[in-house]
Length: 148
Image (cartoon, rainbow, N blue to C red; front, side, top):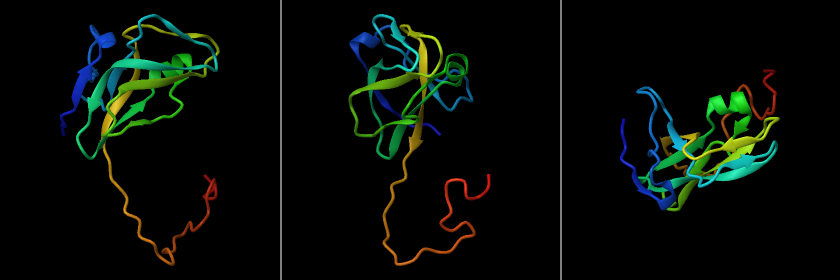
C-alpha cells in the first residue's frame, strides 16, 4: 500500500537524499542527518539532529521515528522517545532526538543515516464510559503478573 506524503526540503537539507527505503521489503525509510558540522554526542548525552525537511502527512497518518538497529548494537545509539511521533498537523522540521548510551563519544556527520521512519495509519479512540468491564483470565494483574 502506498500513500503520498508532501515534503519540503529546507536549505540546510540541500544535496541530501530524501527519506528513502534501502530495500524493496524495508518497512522504514532512512533519515539522514542534515547537520552543517559534525555533532559529537558524549556518553550519556543527547542531541536534536535536524533532517533538513518538513512534511504534510495525509489525514489519518503519523510518521514514526525509530532507532536504527545497527547504530544501537554497534554504538549504543538510540532514540529516547522511540518511537517518536510526527503528527499529521505538524509542519515544522522533522528532528531526531539521539541518545548515546554507549561508552564512547559518537560523531554525527552530514548525510549519516541517523534513524528510520515508518508511515503508519492512526486509529482514533472514542471513549465509552461503562460501569463494569468484561472479565478476563488475567484480570487486573499487571507488571509481570503473568509469570513471564
